Amino acid sequence: MNRRTMKKIIGLCCATFLLSGCHIYKSYDRPESIDATGIYRDPVAASDALAVDDTTNMGNLSWKEIFRDPKLQMLIEEGLANNVDMQTAILRVKEAKALLTSARLSYLPSLALAPQGSLTSVDKSTPVKNYTLPASASWEVDLFGKLLNAHRGQKASYLQSKAYQQAVRSQLIGGIANAYYSLLMLDRQVSVTEQNVALMKETVRTMEAMKEAGMTTEAAVAQSKGAYHQTEASLADLRRQVRETENSISVLLAKAPQNINRGTLEEQVMPADLAVGVPLQLLENRPDVKAAELALAGAYYTTNQARSAFYPSVNITGTLGWTNGSNGTVISNPAVMLWNAIGSLTQPIFQRGKLIANLKVSKAEEQIAKMNYQQTILEAGKEVSDALFLYDTADKKLSEHQAQVAEMQKAVEMNNDLFQAGKATYLEIITAQQSLLSAQLNEVSDTFQRMQAVINLYSALGGGRE
Image (tube, rainbow, N blue to C red):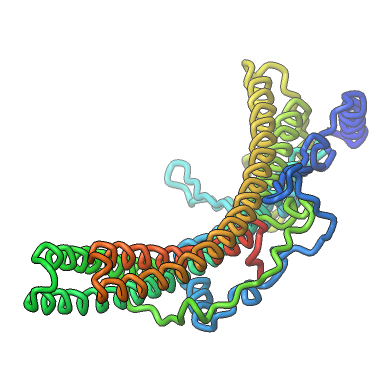
């Protein structure tokens, strides 16, 4: 093929492309239909709409500013270094980066060296040596964006893998913190229950002494023992939960189940300002939202590739090397240079409907990715709204249960005094003690729920970035 013919082919391809009006070279832009407005609900406002004009966002804070317990920080650092899911996500990023590098190099010609040699003998004559030392090159001219869109799609996949890594990181930090605070809550509940067990054990002794003195009945003694055994059973269950939570944290850290070094619930200090920023920040900060958008971008470029398949493919190949053979004969000079260059154009005409089907499938997948992206935004807004309401609810419950604990402590003391004076039954004492224990356990649970709300909100806002 001469140079003039090659120019005509390339010119024809360019004209076809210009007349097609197809946007196969256009890069991805976020669809205008994607909307994050009003996805946060206010936990207290009657209008239900959370007014957020301040761009301050706790999701932008370092996790060490949120979780300030040094022992918890050590656990999180250990988890980030050793957790299997985290290490897997890091390797996925490396895989995607390797594929992206390959996609970038696809613009360059491919080179190959294919030396050949032979020995030929006719009627027992001296063998004739024939050799060829060619180096071949092949280059696909990307006139219609097939390689461009493949490269852009692979870049979106690479960025998506990085977003997934960040999502795993955020979930791991939140998971370790949540399990750690659960452990502190259970420790405190064990302590409260142990105090009540000791109190009830002493009460049983008192009741037995009073029965011996004829001051109470066997039924009252049996009732006190029943309450004691019930509390002992709940204590055993709490200790089981402590052990299971320790084991869960150990697994998150990729080590065998063992004791977890920890502080106390009373030592914990959590941020009081729960700033959520404007909803648009959620699209940039939250890794699963970013991953969903990058999946949409990848689907967009796949659709562009499907469109590109309808246009011609232009390839240029060439060979350069040495040979001692020419047209099947051996020549005297063993180092004669040979070269050739070929330009080819392939225009799909009839592919049994494969190209059309592939384009339709690609468009459908792109639409699915778009819907998934919008749904991920809604889910993220739901999680932020849930965390805000959980914090508000836990705060109110904690205030009420603290007041209940104070009142039940008074009730226990007064019932003991009335019982000593013969003006109250032991059933009233047991009822007051059980109510006090329940209120104390609820107080501890509310304190944990408030911490959990902070963890949930921090994760929902995309917190935990490096």
